[in-house]
Length: 100
Image (cartoon, rainbow, N blue to C red; front, side):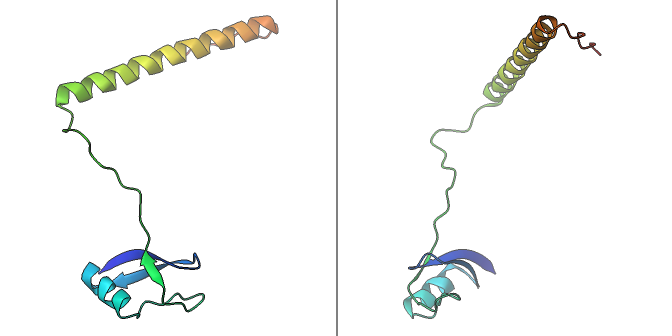
């Protein structure tokens, strides 16, 4: 069984369960698909956003480099936040947070 998200001409969204895509298309062509809200048979399959690969998969070294760059960026951001908190604490005369 496969589930398709369907939508009628009036914008009502609902699910349809079918044996396969061909069965859904056959029922659609025969006018057997019907909106459960307004009873129209003007029903289409809703399109879904999908990921489309536009290049070859990244090699392991590229993936590792991207991961490492992300970790470095996070460490830099953490350091910047810590300096900001210290600055604000001093500015308002609050006790500095203790490092763990």
